[in-house]
Amino acid sequence: MAKTSSIERNRKRERLVKQLGPKRARLKAIAVDRSLTPEERFAARLKLSEMPRNSSRVRIHNRCNLTGRPRSYYRKFKLSRIALRQLASTGQIPGMVKSSW
Image 1 (tube, rainbow, N blue to C red):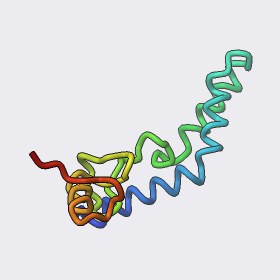
Image 2: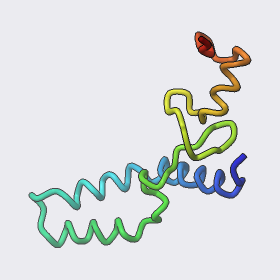
Image 3: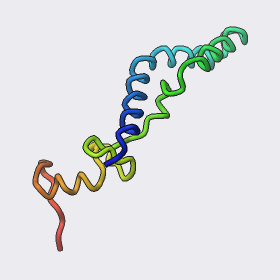
Image 4: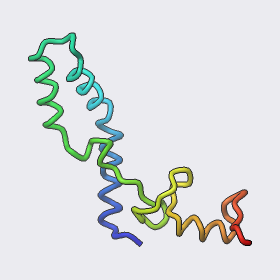
């Protein structure tokens, strides 16, 4: 099980991205728009830099929904490989069978 603080920190980042994502996208669009004046683009970049760093989508780390494990994460199931194997072995994931040969 991952530390509770790391799981909560990641959840806080997800909330910030959801809350400030549209504003950040607008400012980024203004900052790269070549048809605007350099002063307007620079002002947009300044506003972007004043926003919280954790409101950036890049800072979110994929974590297992059950255990919070940050590594070996399957996006399709939103689980780590260990949790996925346990659930598959108990038959809780429809259609998934543990291979044996």
